[in-house]
Image (tube, rainbow, N blue to C red):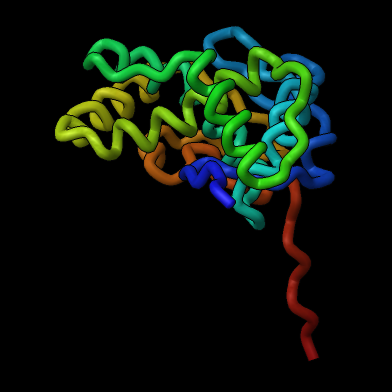
Length: 180
C-alpha cells in the first residue's frame, strides 16, 4: 500500500483536542496573526490518518501545516508545483490502491497539507533541493509564530525535521528526587 511518507506525518492522538495558544483560544498555532485552529488540525489528522506513518507526534503535523504555504510558494517560484487537484487525485489513487475509503470532500487545510507532503517529495528529488530548502528556512525564520505550549515550541532552524518541537512547558516543574 502506498502511503504518504513525509517528514511531517502524524497519527491523531488525544493531544489534538488540547486547548490552543494563549493569544487565541482554540488555536494550535498563530502564524503572522492567522490561527491554525485545533479543529483544522484535528480534521487534517483524522482525514489523512489512514495515509500517514504511525507513531509521529502531533507537533510534526502542526509543523507541516505551518511550513506548507512557505514551501508551496518557494517551490512554485522555482517551477515546481503540485496543485490541489493533483493532491486530490493522488490521495484518491492511494486510497483506492490501499483499500481506504475516500472522503466525499477534503477541507482546504487537509488539501494544503496533502499538497505540502507530496510537494516535499518532489522538492527533495530536485537538483535545486538544497537552494529551495535554504530559501524555505530563511522565510520560516521571518514568520511570527506562536505555538500552543501543548505542542511545544517553534524553532524554524529545525524545518527539515519538524520546527515544532515537543517539550515540557516551563511552568511544569519536574519533581525533586526523594532524598534518603
